[in-house]
Length: 371
Image (cartoon, rainbow, N blue to C red; front, side):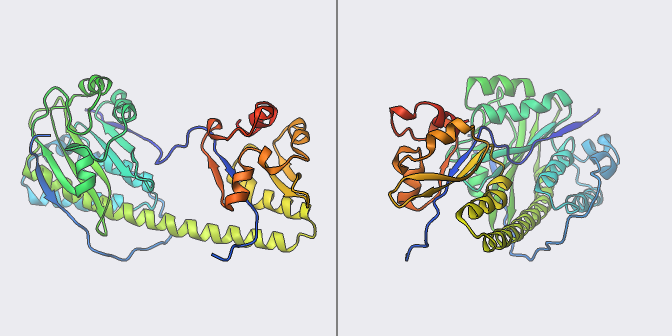
């Protein structure tokens, strides 16, 4: 049977985002499931550049899909160890977190499941589905649709939320009518779950250095048999290897991000040191800070002695919008008054979040900011 998988990006930003940043002097101040607890010790990590290694499917790692399915419930220690060794090599060959997690999904199907999903905890406390695999290519989008229809509630009992909270694996020997605990919460999700097929499953945590990074959900739908203790053990070992590689990738990304931020600050500092006028400062900020961030438009505003604003530099705005802006007070411009008052950046995630300062601002400028 042919197995195909697709990859989803780790994060996808929808809509447009807006930032107001003040420039000022620095101020002076379900049923009872079986569970297993797995925790990882502290470890060191390399931040060497990613090795280029083409991904290999499970067939090349375990001798074909048929052999992979035969590993289900198998107590053949030699076969299992050989598979885990190959899987660990494959997972550790990349320092890209998205690649690591998609390879994990590919390894899990059909070895442990008919379909699987990988969910991670984001920095802001959300749960994001980042990878999926299914024995049938046309079913993969449904795995992502199941998560899109209803965001996971981390306080819910059972299923993925409980695994993410506790760091303990959950074995689901029987799932009735697609009602996966803590996951299938709405009628729309139930319809998708029935199309996917959910008869049994297990969910294992992705753990590294005592932290829960995510969860691997392994579901059996149309195939015979239910996961047992040997399957749970194999899933935990596979998840452990994936967690080590994921943590390594995340630490590398963090170190790389810090390096890029330092380089960017150095470039901004150098550009500002060459600026002789306020307009030169504005040009340096737009070139080194605003434009690289990727906005469609931006402006650097100055404040005259009488408190009125003037445009030091801009890009992307229509001339009529800038003409309207010149000579106005700060409290007449959406968001600018708050940025100056609080001396903090103001972040607007969509046009509706941009404050409207007065009736006269229902026109061109607000539309210019909010598009």
